[in-house]
Image 1 (cartoon, helix red, strand yellow):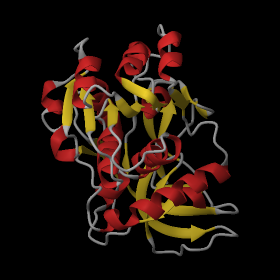
Image 2 (cartoon, rainbow, N blue to C red; image 1 turned 45 degrees about the vertical axis):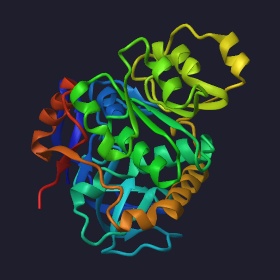
Image 3 (tube, rainbow, N blue to C red; image 1 turned 180 degrees about the vertical axis):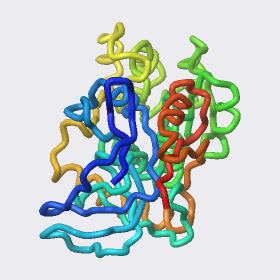
Amino acid sequence: MRAAVVASQGIELKDVEQPLPAVDQVLVRVRAAALNRADLAVVSGGRHGSHGGPGTIPGMEWAGEVVSIGQGVSGFKPGDRVMCSGLGAYAEYAVTDIGRVMHIPDPSMTWEQAATLPVALQTMHNALITAGRLKQGESVLIQGASSGVGLMALKIARLMGAGTVIGTSSNPQRRAQLGSFGADVVLDNSDPDWPKHALEATGGRGVDLIIDQLAGPFGTPNLQACAVLGRIVNVGRLAGRFAEFDFDLHALKRIDYIGVTFRTRSVEEVRAITAAAMADLAKPLSTGQLVLPIDSRFELDRIADAFAHMRANRHFGKIVVTMPA
């Protein structure tokens, strides 16, 4: 099969052996795959958790048809339309654990649309509902809301009954679009006064739940914007891993600061996350309420261009790679 493989000079197309499904695994004919920022490190020769290095096939999410199933798999059969997360998406075939496979509930959904969803659904349902313990009517702030995962967080927060939903972005063109994805209030997080504006948007109380994709210098400002007994869930560190942190303010407000990542989760934990997300979100998925915007599409043989487009950081929504027919 053809696959995009990490090489000394970046990423190259090669013929590699097609994978076979092991116990509890599903083999899928990939029709489309989506790019994620974590893939950038792998393509550049780094690692995302234990994944990376020469010969690695990058890619964390895809959509396609089930080809075959391993021993112990139930609920899926050859020909099923599915969307998946895992490893090795930038290839004609990919295999993953059954706990990372989801039926595409909307028959009209395209492969490209479905490929943009798995990581965002799993990550943000877990961050908002399981780790963040979102309750009906609570205020939510999504830090870095204009990414694909951030846009999904806005949508899920709205669907799950949040009160005031706040989205942040440093880009004025992206900020202008956040309202159509569920944001009641949009803040410029390059403005040093953004925590003050978040307090104003919540009547001075502060935000009940902050989903932070940025970290770095946003650590203490997040504390300033957060309510007493609020929660901050750190999903990403796009602005940096290290920064000063006001521990006294953290203690004063009695904030729960929660870190999440899939890199240290067990197979059983990931299966539970996927099941919980689909239990809450299968219906809105089936009615098209959780579709993400697609910024651009690239064929597999132009995958290097797709990553160059992501590095330029001018996209809004997801970048998708399509496979040969």
